[in-house]
Amino acid sequence: MVIDHIDNNPLNNKIENLRPANTSKNGFNRKMSANNTSGFKGVTWNKTQKKWQTYIKANNKTYYFGYFKHKEIAGAVVLLARYKLHGEFMRIA
Image (tube, rainbow, N blue to C red):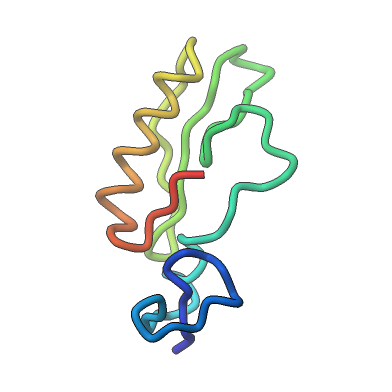
């Protein structure tokens, strides 16, 4: 078990900003990578398909949700999936 900062600010140690989490759930709340080119967590460009690929990780599995021509639609699909699989630990960006 670890302590998760709800607002992702490690300096904000107010009790209402802290919650217990396992390492996996704590990772759901991670910031978007600086290398991200789509602007959406879980959306990457697939050169072979020439489309945006969607995926998330949860419960020690990687879930793929298909390829999309428009990254905004791919982002919406991943956002919904993260809401369902990550729950309260979901982070938008």
